[in-house]
Length: 344
Image 1: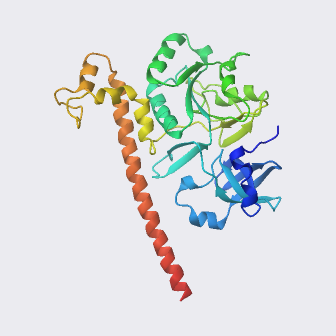
Image 2: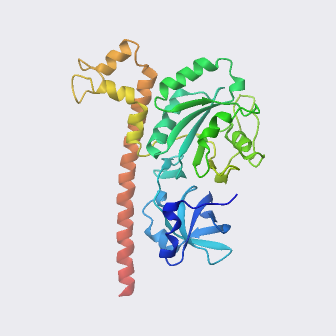
Image 3: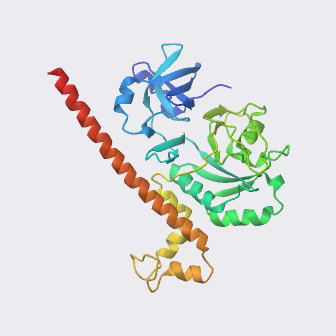
């Protein structure tokens, strides 16, 4: 399948010292796989790129379009990441106060959740917040429908929590179980599949590819899946669409998702705007529309708690980002002073 560069970048390379426009198809630590019109090759970022990078998210990620010097047939040198039209981010796993780019330049992000023991509305709200913030269109993909005895009820619950997003139910075990996603896979478009381990992402992508290219595994005894994808990778489907497979996420920490949280919980935002006091804390003030809705059973208390938790996490991430920016600036100033001292 030929690899086409978007028109907005096609004429850029000749203006940039003969560099080539390519797309990152694989990323593992500091190594990349770059695809251009001439084919694929390994790639590294230049020393100048490393020096100029302000944060982790400045580095290339799967799905990024870049400018690279491909003169060396063995290893290309990446000099610049081209502006992203969308980017799905999270706070890096563990205790690290840094961000992580999951996928870039995606048109549709499929939020995969299986209809067995993986089913969790609160986790889905977390994924939706990150997806709305990314700039891509979120679609909820309920997988393993063959393992669920009450699909209608669970789908209704998801639709109430995923306002504004399409909700599809699929089963990769059926021959035609993936047909609902096909309208999103037109030539030239990029989609990403994200979700927990074992929800069937790799199985579904293999169906779309028409071959068992990605490793898959069955369920464990606890009705959950194994980790089978260990890295992010961009693949070209037979029809010309591109798909990004991602490892299962044990956790999805919030990172700068203010507007994403607001859109995911638009119903709560609307209620809050009707409170008597503009600075209502929703804890005990008279005329609190949020508390009134909870008492009347119009707002689920679990959804309200989820909203509060994600808002709190996002505030923490914002503080972390400010801290890291200040720390980075300080170290750059020290490096500049040391460099000037060496020249003297």
